[in-house]
Image (tube, rainbow, N blue to C red):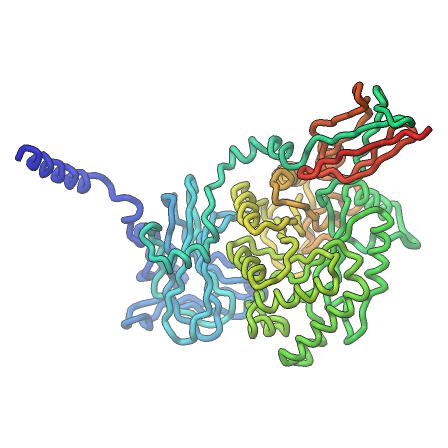
Amino acid sequence: MQAKSLNVRLRLLLTLLALLLPAPAAALHAAELLRNPDFATSADGHLADGWSDGSSALPRPADFSFTAEGPDGRSCQKIVLGPLQGGRFRLRQTVVAPPPGLYRMRARVRVSGAVQVEVVLRTPGEAWTTWGNAQETPPAGEWRDVVGYARVPPGAGECLFVLLFNDPGTMWIAAAGLEPVDEHGLAPAERARVERLLGPALPPVDEARVLAETDARIQASRTAPLSVYVMDAAGQPAAGARVRVEHVRQLFWFGAGFDWNLLPGHGETRVDELHREGFLRLFNAATVQFQSEYYESEPGVYRDAECLQAIGWLETQGLRIAGHPLFWNLTSPPWLAQAAPTKDQVRRWMDRLLAHASNTILPRFSRVVVFNEVVAWDRFSTPMTAVLAGSGKAAVMAEYLRRFKGLNPGVAAMINDYDTSPAYYWLLRDVIDAGGPVDAIGLQSHMQGGVWPVAQLWMVLNRLALLGRPVYFTELSVSSGAPRAFNFRPANPPWPTTPEGEAAQADDLEQFYRLVYSHPAAAGIVYWDYADRSAWLGCPVGLLRPDGSPKPAWFRLDRLINQTWRTRGEFRTDAEGRLVVPHAFEGEYRLLSGTGEARGEHRADRPLNAIIRLPR
């Protein structure tokens, strides 16, 4: 009887505590995280209170108004967008310090036509990290909930809830929500959808620890004991023999996009020579572009001679060479689109392109981007987009990857994208599951607006590492100019480099290279563009100024690549004729003792054990 009374009192105490203590995060209502989630009030410019227009590069501002056309006749925000011309419309709201955990994002919208809607939760600023996004093209004229999930890490601070509209037209927004979700309470089907949207669950990134352990990771993943055994002419151990260790070339790809101005020619200036010297001193690899709009600018007429000239020159300089890209929907030849081809005709063109290039330039590359920027192909209406949409991305990509490998068995096949979200992970996984031979994964990292946070870089690498393929940063760029908004049109105003920007660029690139080099899944970094004189968008991302003089970042990378991460020197063998260099960096080595010589490749997973036989 006494025990029963105690239980009753305990239950009463727990009930009282539940009433007095604040509710856990999962009990928060969406309205507590988003201000004005039902767009009920208006502000200046007829844009709902709490919301702002974060768009850029729009030819004219959006037309905001309110209407009673919402569900059940309720008020809703109406937005009319004209042509976007490469920009996207962003309706956003700042959310302050959301507790860590899983959140459901929701936007109730109606659109007038084929308008793609995205819901995104991300960090603020230019170099932002996305915690979750979902995209959908709702049926025209129907109210539809676009729903996604986001996983907010600990210590996230404020974030942005963003509605993106990628096409012109009219859209109505009746409500938007951000609400915490009990992940353990999700049904299996919903849990699978969360994983599809957010990728496999990975532990949160401890930035301080990742940075602090960089050198230890480099030693563990990029070095190994290198052994040399020297024998005299009689086949006996050569004790005390002097051995010169030459680190001929790194295994890791420290590359750059190839600039056609690097080719020696008549009338070149000292500036041209400085650019060539700076390029060859720093890089051991290069990427040659052969976009089909350039490679086959006229039907059946291919620019093989020019591509082979560049490839041949790079080979004579001892550089490894990548090709970029075979299939890219945004660079298909204009004449192809003008012909309004059927899907079968586009397929036949793709087959001819693959067959011809496989007989000419493709076998000369170490690796080739077979498909470029595929995650977002469905955002654009091009001949190749229609092919993938009709048969499914993964199936078509797997088919052409198999054909590519059949024709070019010695060339690594790569898929490349700027999309670092889980959508890229799942596309790669779907292609692999469909039998596509993906030999390597490419990541673009153009960072004109600011470098990626350490947590984003590390999370992306950890996620892609689950696929078991080497990861290459195929297009890296970091600006040395003053920060500013820019658009993707070729005619940007002059964007000069600055001393302050150059100092920041050097710091950012040194950290980025060190972090990537330390990750076991990473296999290379290709800088894009290495010099300001040919930089994309006119942004001063180069390591060399237009006059060919090096920026501080060039010197930092030169020290890392050619000094810190190389193993060189003269050593002597022990009494048994052996020499062991305990932490030799990966690479191709030339080992000399007297007139004897040995060469070999040294890898962390396959350390070099060389033998030098001294002649009589």
